[in-house]
Length: 88
Image (tube, rainbow, N blue to C red; front, side, top):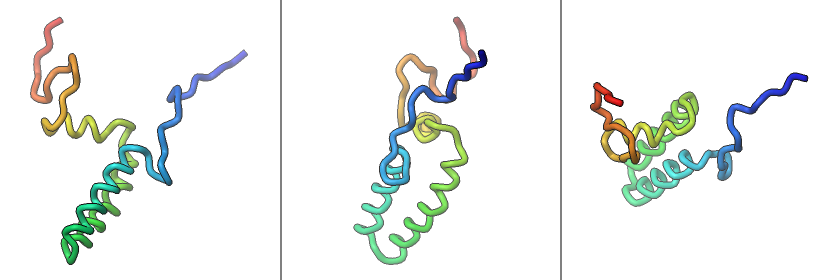
């Protein structure tokens, strides 16, 4: 009897054809592009079209870890992004 476990215990939340993290980035970018308008707005939409395929090539949870690496977010009981030595 051979049983396999799925890679993820639950399916990721999907809104339209984006996962939840992509959806937030898409909506925020479109919101800012509409407010700014002009060439800069179209540039933001173009950057979004390049960002989504790049993000999909990364593992799940990549955006929060990217924010952690840039120092924009903190994880509880987790060392900082510049920590090089660990003591147990």
